[in-house]
Image (cartoon, rainbow, N blue to C red; front, side):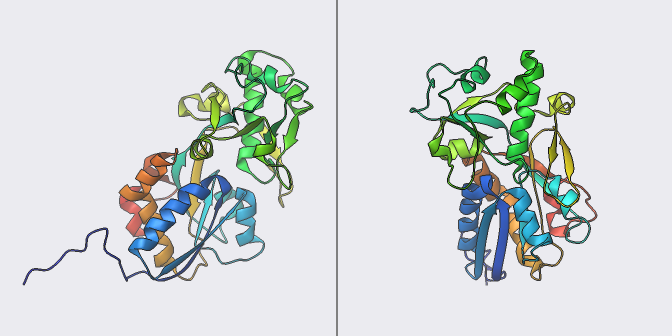
Length: 297
């Protein structure tokens, strides 16, 4: 009798249950694809995916005491800062990103803007540009870091304050959406996914390259609204995740993470404009679930 080996396309009845995933909004499309493929393999699993600003997502666990199976932040450092040690004791860095300036065919001066004059275009009286809330979203404080670094990179004293005080500088949220603006600061992957035009900023300021880690560290932004308050220092953009310690179905949550870090998950991340880190990075190999050990270092 020949024993049949299950192929990746065959359903697996080993995992079941409800898996709530709280994640950064910029991961919505990517995780949507990952979730769909995971549920094909595990038809007894129900995934409830809930996007939010990264800090707000973490507070759902730490302050609202909501049940969460996987927590994914656009800034991995928020996990140890806000979740250790009561809610988590490990994290995995699974992808990197960069800040870009997105726009459309209708954006004012879109035919003129480039990496040498973008900050001049944004200061024009008739231009509106958006950024995310730095107290809630890593993309928000990373945008401010880009501005600080731009002041140094282009050698323009006072540029950071000028951008902050520009007439068209708009904090997004509520009724203000990217479609109402000429330009929007954010990550590259959502721009790719939404088929938007985007301006790639110099690596010296876009927080994408580990080679510029020391240069990025010159930028510092104070986050208000958290219990302790934090001053965040510029560094390469690295997305992180963890499985909260109090989630009852650890096998299910870890199984999803294993899928994300595997060949199928990596392929999806790449197709969605993200840059997966392979092998993924972990804060402590001794603390992560053993089933994930082969995919991290």
